[in-house]
Image (cartoon, rainbow, N blue to C red; front, side, top):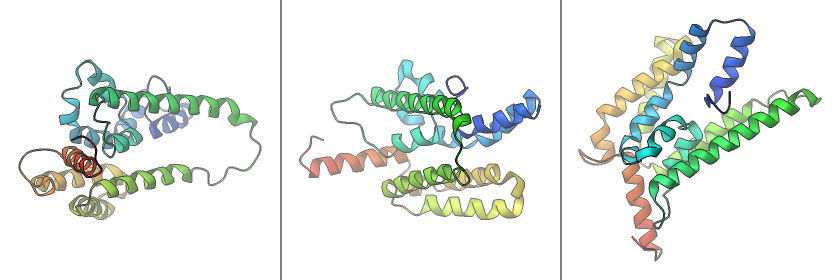
Length: 207
């Protein structure tokens, strides 16, 4: 499952649902809802992926929370092809995930110590990803949009909090897009790219 589906948290959810005898249609629907945030990731990477050529299908398949965090905060070296850089990060993340899942499934039954609270590691991961995004994106509008989506989702449908919050946040960001990007054209990722190039020139690197 880690190799073929590669759906992060949805894999853990699917295992529990399969064990409880849940139908495939229900599992597919719940997985779609849980991973709906990936659609938002994809929208912000339309421009970088448009020139990926034969790598594009794999980059779409391998776009996870961790991969998105790296692709939008790290600028590739000036002498390295951007698409190959993206593909390398995506492939390495998938290898790490597959190896980790395999080791965990093989050794999990042999662990005898209390692992209560270990699931907080996932929360810690998202905190780290958020910190990286805050460092890369200095404008306050995306964070206000996310906060607005969360608050409204609590009142509209707490049971579908994630999906509702994503829809509201995405709508707010779409309305504020030109203001966030500083003009009618370009993307947030291009803004990060330009900032990285300027930093490189200030440090004596090539533009």
